[in-house]
Image 1 (cartoon, helix red, strand yellow):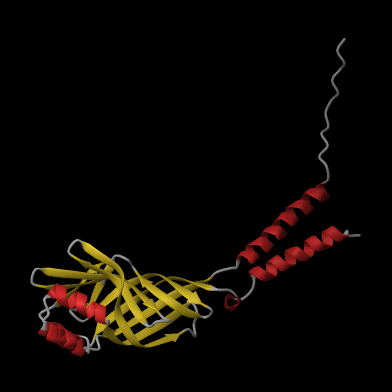
Image 2 (cartoon, rainbow, N blue to C red):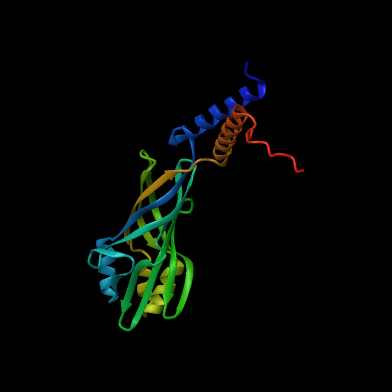
Length: 236
């Protein structure tokens, strides 16, 4: 007949197995990778041409369409509940704006879903300003029908007032033209985000209890180890 402790041990093991076998939807998710595509609108391309600014990829970014579309790896992000809260691109990937001898690099992009803002680092010469608000995003649409492969599409991207002033002054854009640049819809940023389920700590705890119980049960069934040998004669 099984003792009460053994029955409890068996129930703990079953609970641990059941917790591990829960479907992915029952546990939180984490961002594991992906890629983002920045595409400038016709209006943006025309405006950049008007102020004599060229755009090239920097770091780990790649050109999809010269002067218009650029791709960046996604390396991080966060998921709140079932939906994305933020998306982070590779810190070393971005674009460089060049006018004459002046070059400005924008990289380490982060989409904050709650505020619908695109943040990024701005490097002018040897000086870098981190996590600057670059674009206000008019529309953000997420498709999480496949929670492991999501999309987050941003459209209606307008430079923030601070970004217009910082970039405009550094590139020598006249103040009256800075106002025009601030009214330009710069295009879209479409992200393909890969995610993976994350088991909760309690799941690992229950599994550990179950495995420890199995080990204890095996030791108990084996019983104590008895060593047999030939008795040594007593010393004279």
